[in-house]
Image 1: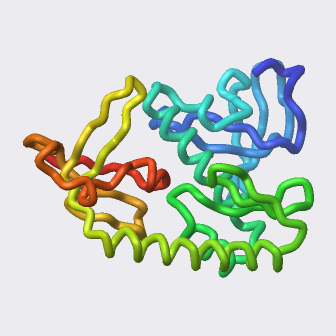
Image 2 (image 1 turned 180 degrees about the vertical axis):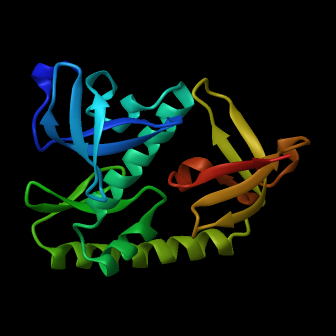
Length: 210
């Protein structure tokens, strides 16, 4: 980084010594010269570093595309946890039962549920909790209906207008997954009441087995 952009007290990231696919960090303590600075690590120890190695973001500090993708994923997971921590743990655990990528956080002073077809906003935690309780009861009824019908096959409508068919191995509502394998045979020989349409279970992810 250019020395003009550096700020005392700010955290910077740099490649880990001997392992450029990982990174370390430090708080800028002193600008020694145009090419050298002093930082303090998490343990409180001071160390010197070249300004050329400093970066504002962890993913920029590592070398290689795969390493950068890994670090970005780690950053996203950390950010997600920070957002989720703004909501009561017990209520958050109930919110996550509504879908694979569903969670709650706080935005602009309001509670919001992310991951549904439409984001839902609530002025208070009590209203959020009340909404989740109602939706969980609906979800339980929905699961019971799906299980009671004994679906054996899955129809997946494709964008080009045709349908793909699969044989259902199992349905996991806890993991929001449908385990299946490619259907072999003539679908016209199958009764329609044994075929589950993927649009009826939009929040589920397919896991296709051989």
